Image: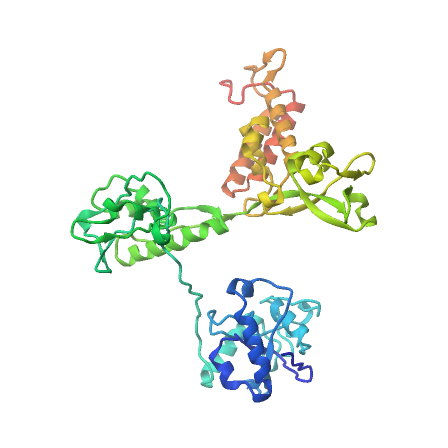
Length: 520
């Protein structure tokens, strides 16, 4: 299966085919047939998801065949590898090991020579996917900037008749039906097994009342149980699957423009006036379905002349994920002893997640831990300075990692204002950022400090109607300007910082005046 090719100077690239590619059978030499067949059997046991994942194990096989470099005629050995997918592009790539990490790992694993074409941007330790800078070791392209060089290569291949420019799209089938109750019913009926669209005067098809949401027979959705809804008088049968949630939510913004129109989804004059959505905010994973189908409906309606714009949103912002800050304990292998994080290197340990709710900052409540699970009841602790200090790890919030935080608990303890402000204060909206419950206390103290500008625990309200000083006005309007600018940029964490600076300055000025007193 493994064929080392270190004697070949591959120069710019290395051709790699998907194991399922039709050419593999045609070009594999008799000497490599057994290795190729063995490798293809291995790949068949792997799912596409596994193949697409970044894996540490590098696999592949040499076909025994060679391609000719179309510019200099050099022979280049052709390999197959599971990281190239038949359904993506043409199922064949020209790997560039110094510019792509998976190509780099592949070449390193099989001891294939790697030519540096990006100069100082390549260290030899890992690939550099830059598309900037000047090319080196690239024949007639040497000295050219990379982007125009790519255009030149394509043009030269077209001129010589050896290739043509083509844009490849990664198209995948997507299931648009769900075996559940909630969702828009499909306006489809079946007559003798053939689907027909429901007549327009019978729309909309509405969900019937159901007694329960149990699945129907043979894996059908709950609607299959409502026989008087499914079976129509003419003998036809309704579709019992429903549409996914994003079927309706991907075009509702158009309906919002003209919600009471009984003749069409939205009048053209109305959509011309309101036009596109200015800003769409959503997490990357959650937003994909909405964005995909929003663009589909928008472009269809545009082509039909129903609306005047072919993109639904002017701007997209993907909010970052708030990750959990997990807490770890370290069990001395084969024992009931748990060693504090600062001492763990002295022992052979197993790392275990622990519920963050029994940890104060990094200090573990050892009694709560012993009561948490039956197998921890006899736990013993090796402490440092009388405390058990946990390790930390930032990862996705999940019950599996015991790092999920219940917002209701925090709101009950600190209030909704503190909770919301801390979320904004965590960092830029587009970045993933770790949640740290201990950090919410600082925001809570700030809000208390803000409150003390206007109220005293003993005296009650201490607001005055005095005219503001020049320094107080300067602080106020400087803050208004900063928050206005930050809000426009969705930079809420720096807006919160501006609030904090404002309160500190007003506290130093001992200002207890109404913010918008009639005296100015």
